[in-house]
Image (cartoon, rainbow, N blue to C red; front, side, top):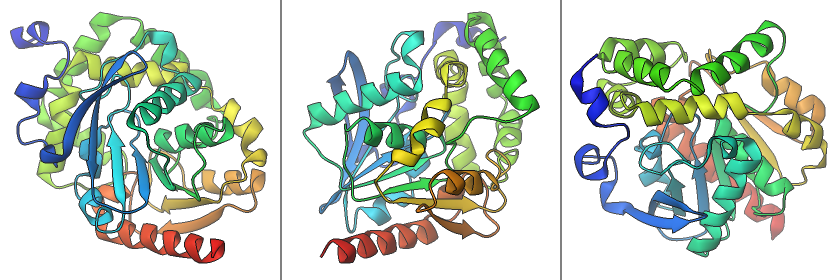
Length: 301
């Protein structure tokens, strides 16, 4: 392993934030006992963006400026991810993450009128709505990881994540492997998405740090989507499911399971796009978000 791996455990804003996408719109906020990295841009109704496991604000690098033409867009790095500090291991659960985000929103003094989440970020948004912490006009899920794994993965992935998250040496080993650009290219390809080299490099910039890897593993180890499955029928907020047909991380078939529990959920397919659809085609996703916002506004008029 390289010596630098043991010198730096987590990303540093002055070192690793140089050239960070939309850096001019970054700020650091203390809320709920954490120091958050948050980006905010644009004017208009507040739109909250929550990224998925293992990502950070860079995931919205091209989408956010497009949405800022119509919204005040707020995008934090989730706890333990990117440049936001990590809470205790047990707080890296769905309820814990939702509580942390609620504290951030209270400190910022904002009430989202629309919320968009990618993968696990969508589950956090639904939890926030069910708990009454936010009351947006609608939730947009991009390849949302909303329901528990079925079959063999349910018996393998969560126990494996618990084992890896509890072993600091394993986090360092995985981070060391990720320092090799080819390893990160493989991880991205396994999502079914194709990113430009600069996009892959931003993931590598974070995944090479043990703390970022540990946060992703801790989320997977603590994640209990039974909470969403049981409560989803009680969700009254309109839910829009944007689903990449080429998603290799969350099967597109999972959206049908969501609609069985919540028939009012609207399914919008994204042909030829993978799990990172919003990074592959930000203009297409931005257009859909704006269309949904307009429809919601007309329905409320």
